[in-house]
Image 1: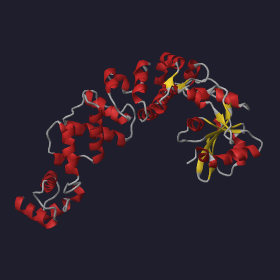
Image 2 (image 1 turned 30 degrees about the vertical axis):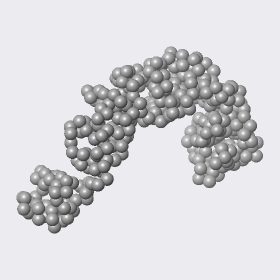
Image 3 (image 1 turned 135 degrees about the vertical axis):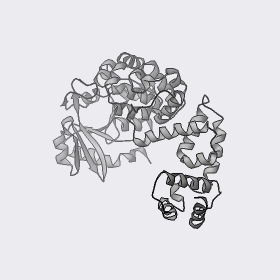
Image 4 (image 1 turned 60 degrees about the vertical axis):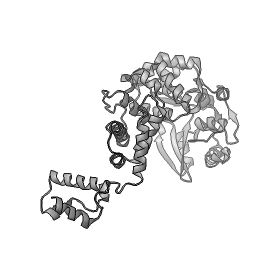
Length: 392
């Protein structure tokens, strides 16, 4: 798709605002991505219309932060964030402004933004307004704060992590004064919520230059103020080659068995289970367990992901790779995929043996499961019941 086509729906908003006597521009990441000729993400719009004006003009709006000047405008089921030009006061919590003031100046609005590459505005005719030389930053692939880096990072400490995340995501470099600002104010990261830190780390690890970004996290000493990371060995962080935050944690836990993972990063249950099962699988590989049993006990995602982790990090046990290939071969030809596939269940066994439930039931089911897996017993109701009667 032509990148200009991406703005087609949003142009309706700019057109409507202008017809009602207001200014309106695209701003932020969408403009940066347009100038870089890459896929465009969320499209944000800024205007001198007040929030109540926006709500009056458009039939479908969502109030997500009117007090801060932001209204969601829905066009053909697509939501667009529209924010009134604003200036900001002090940031007591190192994250959000204590108060905002609306302004009629697009230049003043752009002045409050984090980096010059994100402080470029564009009108509906794709004409660029660039008072802080953001286009030059994009051309030079350089991350530079709008104005004094100490002020920008003191206002919002998350901007330091965003800067390093952009190094990975865009393969840009940090301007020297920007990096020096991060070094000086690194400790402010401790005031950011864990959830926001994790958001940035996930984006960082999915970028194209993770190794450079990780080196900046280390050399700026930001890691000393990030939960979980602050208790890790820096040399262990340096040597990993990973492309997800979860895989970084998996390797760090393999390298530091005594470092109990307490979910300091507040991950989801799925992510915690992913880590737990991956570590269990890695440990089982060292126990010479049958490939059939391992193929049965672990899902394919866990197996393939651990294979990638080991392949890309030669300080891990490379002998496990052959084992994993054997396990994957067995995976494709398993007689049953889970207990649910067994032709009998606990009720069948209690009825057959005329016994109440108890530990014995789990033991017999496990024995049946194992015999079916190893093709010693056909997974057929009559065959299994006959075997149970003979054995028990």
